[in-house]
Length: 142
Image 1 (cartoon, rainbow, N blue to C red):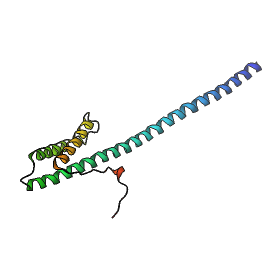
Image 2 (image 1 turned 90 degrees about the horizontal axis):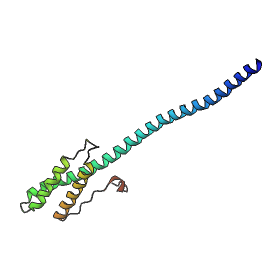
Image 3 (image 1 turned 135 degrees about the horizontal axis):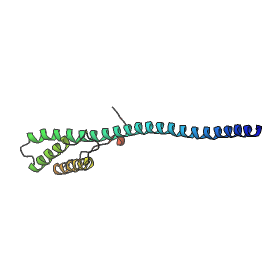
């Protein structure tokens, strides 16, 4: 009887040790999963914010440039009709760009179309404006 009780106690101790290791593994996995999800959300938010800011900065440059050209071309009656049509098309594309829908199926295609229209307009007018992305700017000086 003593041996049976001893064996049972020994089995319980080993069982507890094995189960303790298994519990620790499961708890560690769950904790890692929670931490990983949180880190992933933070990284995704930061990356989304950076990309969104970069796209809107670029669109803002094109839009400001286009609006300034509208005023300039309206004052010059000899301005090219084709350039004016291209300019109006560029402005329309920028104004209808889905800025508030980051998962829009045609977002990248529309952005590429705006860039192409801007290059076309620059070529028609013989201008060489250049948009500098934030990561290309080397420093700020006054």
